[in-house]
Image (cartoon, rainbow, N blue to C red; front, side, top):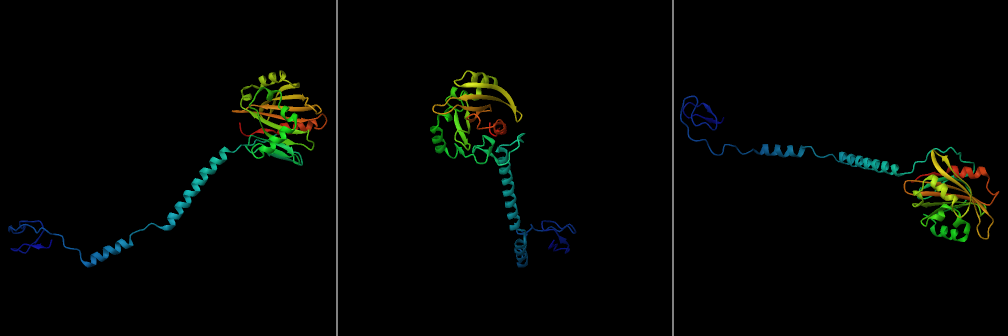
Length: 263
């Protein structure tokens, strides 16, 4: 309200064309009504901009660390979800024994600590060479292993004597068999089957097969086998030794401790 009426000196609004006090007719309002900002105002504006809030570097660092923690937690949870879950076994680990597992985490087993192990995922060449040295290894999973061509030996543990060993193989084709079919097929095989029956172990059912192998150039070998089905592959185990080399208690401890980790 910087304008005044030239007739009565009354304060007027900038856009008024007639004085509201005396009725005096005024000319049009000036085009440029806004006064230019003073130097002080410009200085104040610059100070205001300088003092305006800026992002705090500590908050940025905190946010980055929090994001890393969240991502790690998600990854670790996913990693744990993929790991095999080992159930509590009814078998106690004997003194001087260890819990072994193949590198692919297909199974775990209790074995005497002094038994050397060959794993297909780490010692493939050594395992193949060992399997070719003795005919009894090739026959160890018969009769069931003799019905398929996809059987793959993945694990070999040898006792204090070369003729005592545990051999483990997998087969997707044999996995199509039921436990009853596996027992029936075993009796129709090419080796002497002393017994074939279904047993419960660690809350699951398996087919237990007792056979006598007649390997060329070697004494008869007795094998206790286990046929364990899964979602994709069947697991075949053969714990073999000449008569009298393994006690029934030792054989049962080893075979009863076997647990599938990956199906």
